[in-house]
Image (cartoon, rainbow, N blue to C red; front, side, top):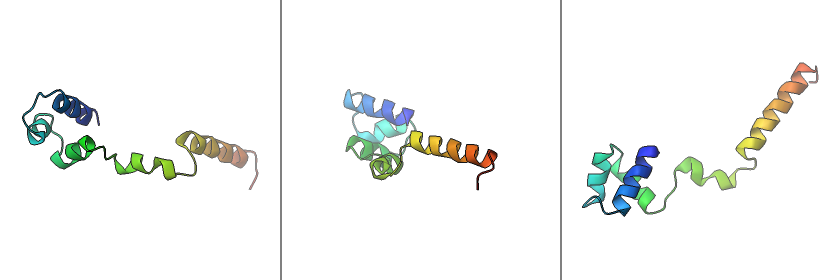
Length: 74
């Protein structure tokens, strides 16, 4: 993702004649860079809003379940 961000910034700044050249220079897939430039998020990030729990909530839930397990609760 860092390389994609750098390639996106370089393209936006006009450092490259075309998107394909920016993708090649930063060793990122052309189609992925093109999608980011169009505002298309990665699948994992795009579906975060649909999740019932945030990552932080999931971590707290796991800790609570582990605690209950250690306390002898079924």
